[in-house]
Image 1 (cartoon, chains in turn purple, red):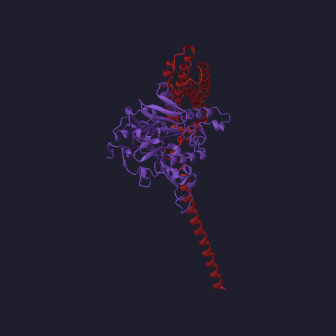
Image 2 (cartoon, rainbow over the protein chains, first blue to last red; image 1 turned 30 degrees about the horizontal axis):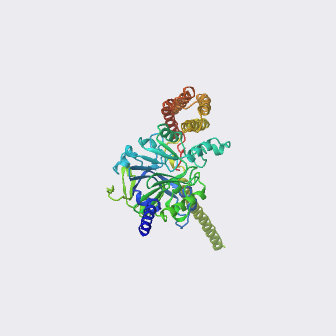
Image 3 (spheres, one colour; image 1 turned 120 degrees about the vertical axis):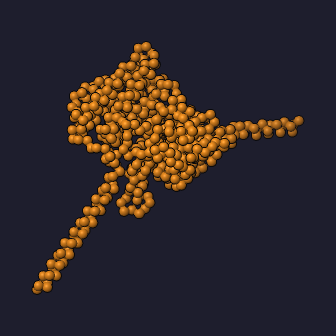
Length: 329
Length: 182
């Protein structure tokens, strides 16, 4: 009897360990398929503006400093698994009023998702890494999706706008240019899209870390690009994949520990977010960058399984869940 | 003596040629370097036809009002947002929206005094339309204060959204690099 009881208790402990322990949680969470689509490409961005350590030095033969310009993709993550289709960052909408002359390959998000067999109406969740126009500019293209945005992101804009020093509260830092002040990068139209979701009761204001579905976890990365930047951890068959929006602007930056895209960035927080990717994914290979120039090439292995889609925009199949068919043409 | 003169002349000629060669090399290097260094930043604007002097003056004159309007539009949106999230009460939201509306009103008076060149008349009218829409949106939003019905926020929303599109469209012409990649 005692032996039977001991055996039963042991069995119970094993079951308990598997159900609440990390192994159990991971085993229960679905494995997700992940794709990347290129909303557009910013052409000829000065290297030093994107990565200060890689500023162009005329005559330099160092690969770090011999490149004058970079071609930056604007990457949108598409994640499918369980009951969800999730979009991480939305890209931006190129209409006649916002035709960035140096942007190429823009295509409607509907066309870009169609190559994956997905309609914008099918998307259940939209997670924005932050609220800048090139990441939160197409929220209203996903009518049925619930938006996830950090509370700190909204508070950060509010704080900046009400700051008494005009150089800090400026919505434009100079005529024809908006870059470093904390309220820059948020056109009223973009913030309206966030507000629209809140008005319709289709928004979740996240305060820190949150599991939004089994195997999908938001991590805060406050001030690592903007006040309320956030990362998204995804459970896949190649391990954990971590999307970073502009906190992870450059994958090379994560690999080589260089800051990138320092708009409203606390560079220490950006490095801490890099560290988080190493810890969560076990290295730098599964960190998904928003503007990595090497995206869709062999040099950024996670994104190498790529093809060219609508209007010359690129797409990549990062990983497939078991049973999910490839979308690569 | 004659030989000496010839040598001297030859040396002077060689020196002059050397200076010319150095100047040419420097000129070529400087030109290519400055092209390389400055090409990236202004490229956005370079692809567009440049503004005329009159258009440029108008853009410069409108800029301060544009900043005020954008700031107020953002504050108005964030006021509605904070109210919906129950972070502020109706009275606080009304105060924020009223302040924004007052900015629109004062900016509109100043904008109407601007003299746009003929080529920008349409754009000028569009900007005034946007300000009008913001004012209407604000008026609709503050009705919540009277009756507590959030439907006013829903009714106000498309107006401010349309206004936001219009000011972006104007900005695309007057300040093409208003939003840089970030």
